[in-house]
Image (cartoon, rainbow, N blue to C red; front, top):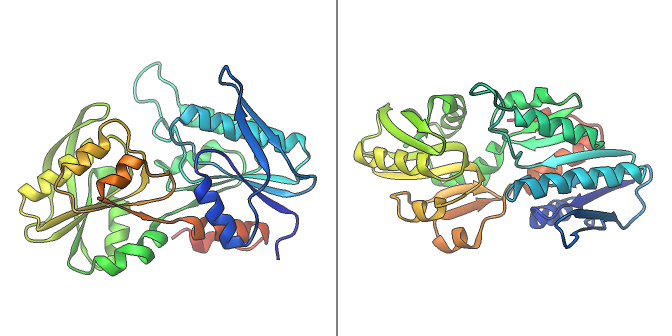
Length: 314
């Protein structure tokens, strides 16, 4: 069914790439991504891609700059090898939080990265759960913004969280996402009002909604240092919640995140494999990983066959 198509993997998440290829019954494209002794990235495409529809699977997770450069260099190598088209499949879009000016004389780095990706020769983007939906507008090429919700619901949440669950948004900005999950789980909704004093530091102020004696599921798009998440969990327990779990699309888990989660009252943290889970996180025993390979593979299949991708958006 697939003719003239190749799927290439950067070094950021080769396991996800292999899983996508397994679902599509295709081999992973032959490419070598290496570094010179001074740290420069080098890429060699080791198969003929002239006129071929190519896909690069590369989340731009830590180390972010290295993985962004890998994506750009692979795209440039494919363009110079006369690939028919180049689609960047970016399960996690690094620099997504720098999507607007938050103070004078600050950059909008999300837009800068978008310009670099387009300049490298990418013709289309497939991304998963952007931090801010308006990032799609930074690209002047087709952009498919997928959501991890179907994978999270089908593979874990529906089987383990029924109509007794309270889906909790950790801030006002995540209410729409939390409402969508609570609707599909037939649960209720709560919101945590917090005030952020400085970057990566948050203070829980108040809980809006009834959580006493309930199972609570904190929902967010990503977990970075886990300060917000752990503070929210502690506030919910203090408010009388029977049990607190968390769910997020992207397990960034920087700094003391894993240690904080391990010592927190959270019973489990459900994340996707958009970013590879660290050995420390796996050893903690608190993380449940849900695969997005089927979702991304189906998007690739539909794009290649010129079918509708919109049914995958929800």
